[in-house]
Image (cartoon, rainbow, N blue to C red; front, top):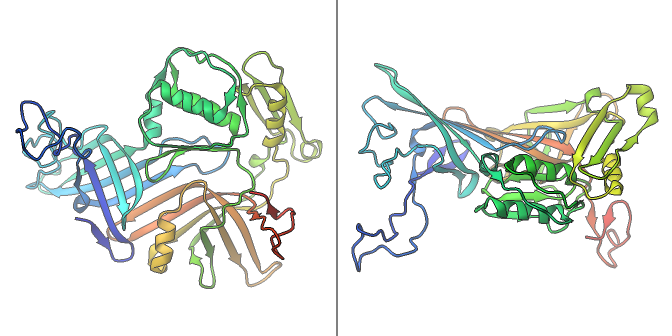
Length: 416
């Protein structure tokens, strides 16, 4: 049964049982019984009532960071007389009698939803239990999404052909084979060379090399789909949430600003894996002021020197500018529609953020931002808080023929 937080909504934490009660099992099921050959998929049990805190972190904090596995940590407790979660309790309803395995064992599927929308879909990675004599038994369940699955997989030696980055990722996933759902861009920027995949190469590390060549995003979304987005740049995606500290927009109570020399890149070198020469792009004015701040990719999967030079130019970020990099909001201060929109915000989406001032110039700053990471902190006592990590973007308007505002091609109106 879903649990309702006064300021949050209705939450449902479900654990996969490891079996399908509707599936026909030889030597167990009865002929003409209710079970069918295909079943209806793995069964899930509701464990919401045991949870007192759930923390989710997905994506990355900055665009220079690599995407890792999304994680969810669930803290639970029970009285010592209640052994429903105890892995030693073979009579627990969560115990898988067909495989003689505890319910919260490693790699069991687990998922969290709010008002019918998934916030996290993944697998149990570890399960820690602590008996407190005379008190309550404490449980900590650590979970990860399918990027964790990629990190556990090794690839066979494979001869590749020259192909787009999205085609290479699709081909790599077939080698594992990856059985999850995918959403892979059909319009990537990068073309990758015919470089042989070495024996036992780690699947996630190779995916990161594809990501380095494309400079897009590879992540698992909140519904458990592996997503590959093309090179980050201007977007036609409108803001799904508008944040501000005044007015009727979604309120935030913590705002982070980055203005750091360490974010400067004024010398970038890219060299393809085989047969190329280092391609370097520099910004002399930035080097003169901020010294050399360099980034190098020396084993790029890109197919040509020309692509390597284009990527080197793309990597340059020569002048530091102040930018909003994170925002945190508690559901207690939001309307129900605002909670609904914020809860399902995902990586690669677009938001806008306004900060107002009582003095100085200007009196307000508004930035269009791309979402790079999302954290959820859900506590039975304190409610639900969402933190969004962002990068700058430019939201373009779709060109509309004969429209007085959007019918002129310009820096703000673009063909889709």
